[in-house]
Structure formats: C-alpha cells, structure tokens
Image (tube, rainbow, N blue to C red; front, side):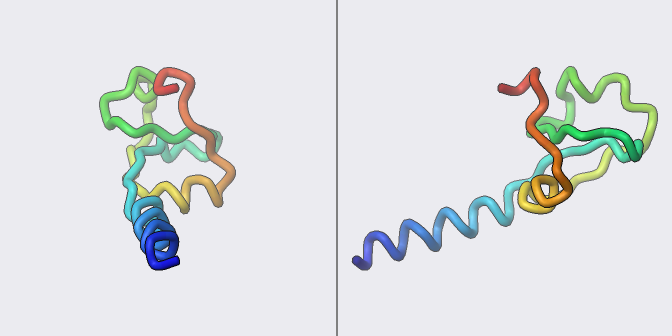
Length: 67
C-alpha cells in the first residue's frame, strides 16, 4: 500500500511540474516538449512556457512532430 501511495504522489508531482511550450497566437491548440520543435518554427507570436496540466486544461494536445 505504501508503494502505491508513493507512486501516485510521484506521478502527480511530475505532471504538475512538467514544462511545455505553446505559441500564444490565440488559435494555437498544440503543446510542445521542446522549445525548438519543428511545429513551433512558424509561430509569429510569443512562445510561452507553461506546465503540462495547464496546457491540457486549455484543451491543447501534443504536437504531431513530437509523438
């Protein structure tokens, strides 16, 4: 039981602190693990660094180049 609890705590903390990158264009719907991702090269707006949980709450999905 202790092992399961520890596993849950570690996984929860990992996803909350995982940083991803988004293009702040207002229409962008993807997030990226790497700041130099091919999918971000056409972004003409500011790149934002946010946590993974926030990106998912905003309805963003992983970029096809990083799958």
